[in-house]
Image (cartoon, rainbow, N blue to C red; front, side, top):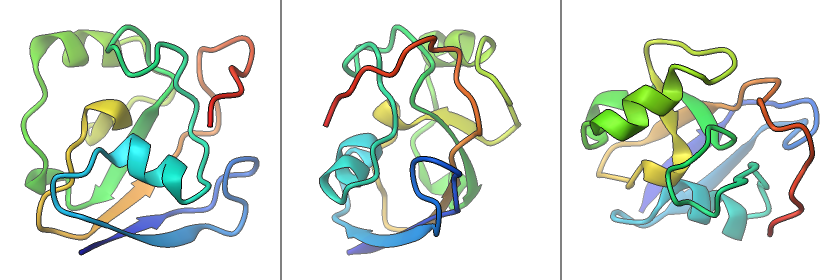
Amino acid sequence: MVTITVLPHHEICPNGATVELNTGENLLEGLHEHGIDIEHACDCSKACTTCHVVVRQGFDSLEEMDDIEADLLDRAWGLEPNSRLSCQCVVADENLTVYIPKHTLNHAKEGHH
């Protein structure tokens, strides 16, 4: 099990959270299973940036992003060097600390769970 620390987000996770995920688990799906409802307008098809997170700790444990993800991230609000699409992150064997940016480019919440 790997510990994922989610830093506080004003709407999604006001007090922050700590969850345990299995190695090999998708970050977005794992967080959703624990009630942390990060937006994902494209249903994880790598076509938007609404699930953008910044990995503050453990970034190097994740597989390298491909060119499509890198190109999409160029459009993400609040882009940082350790930005990733959470739908493309597979949890490795290192604990992660993630920050969910305050805004997304999505104009309406999709209501996915």
